[in-house]
Length: 106
Image (tube, rainbow, N blue to C red; front, side, top):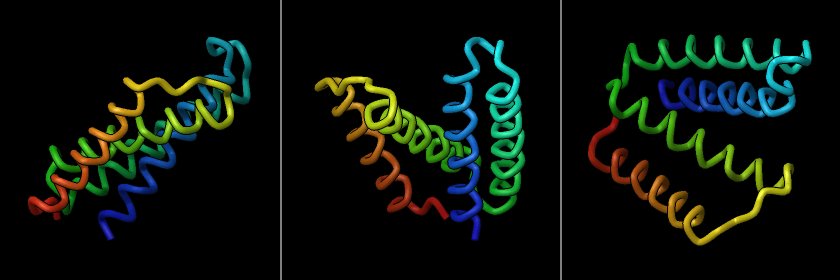
């Protein structure tokens, strides 16, 4: 259950970050509101996750998967390019999350 809550926290953070891109420096109301809501929900869900998961593991997964998701959204929907460095970074994030889970993350 903690992992599902963590995935929801990641989704809320990714939604908030994506909305931030469209807020135009917080000058557009609704994307700015969605940014705020996304981050509040994300931190609340992350806090719930921390009741049953170690803070280091939860934060590493939250930050890593969130970063990888934002890179993917940027490439697919916002026309951002993929470089060898970006691909290597995403691969390292995925390997890191797998190693954390194999090492007894839960």
